[in-house]
Image 1: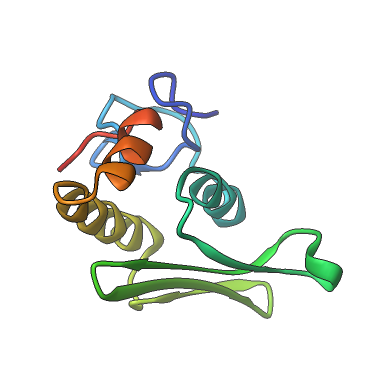
Image 2: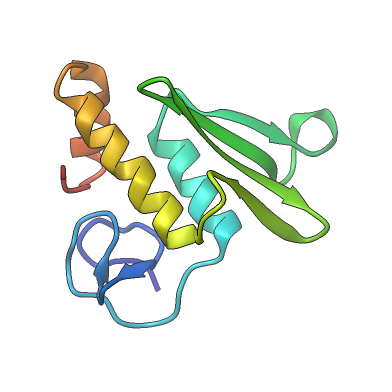
Length: 119
């Protein structure tokens, strides 16, 4: 079940939505669903898909403030760079996005339009 406030896939961090900090209950979203959501809302995302660039994501990377955040599907498992848990990876990405949104109006507009809380 997605977050009722920002409609992001459900991923709780300390009982709240990792995107908008609204109270959250329910099951965690699948990593593939979460990455599809990020790719839709962050225009700077670089993605790789299956054959002929169709089908599900196989890799997504985000360049934010000189740091690369990458998620890659290998043998039915998601590998994350930096190598931390999915929730921590997403929190790091959103923190870096918030820091850069202060100086980049288009990034700030993308983040706020998605309903995400700035950190």
